[in-house]
Length: 247
Ligand SMILES: O=C[C@H](O)COP(=O)(O)O
Image: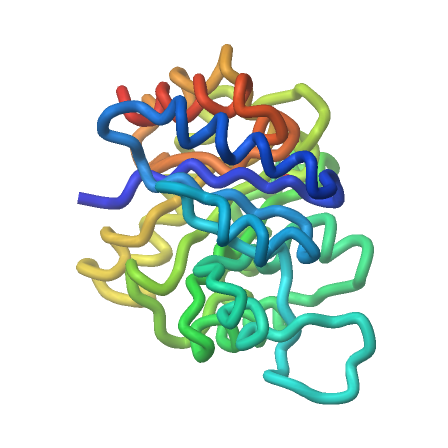
């Protein structure tokens, strides 16, 4: 059975006091929780790893190279050295703010795998691409070019995040989510074989909240969520985690 995953992306939010949310999360996890991952800003990775109980820690980006003259960047081996086990790559905010191409995202995912991290590879269409009927074409192209040559269920997670749903409160219909997740599943099975393709966890991201999580988790081929704003407070994230546990 595919692993259920509730991943929280704190983005560029949080200083040391925010780590108390990890305590509240740990205290409120359901009896049989899904895999819960929190991805804090890089300066909090080490204290988060030290503090988290029953919660995995991930970074929000990594460089393609293991080391070198890249001022301000953080490599996958450095992230692994903190004790973190996941890293988000190819988030649309990185693609937009830093001009990250699919090729760069693939190189980052491969660097993460080489360091023993599990990349959470993000893909998603813009509003104009959605409105012009290009969604599946865009998703197919991003998948083909952003994912490593070789993946397994243990070393790769895919997150579908329609850009127009991120931080906007706009959520696709369950039919729209189902269409894209079914498509991604089929693409993975075609490319990597039915066993691997069927086993990789697919997350939905974009305005997941306590009040819409249960309906989203009912969708076939949605194995969890990548949550932004609602992951900042345990009081918001815990109901989403519970909804996933109950799905
Ligand atoms: O990585 C998380 C996503 O960008 C979703 O963010 P959001 O839940 O604030 O819409």
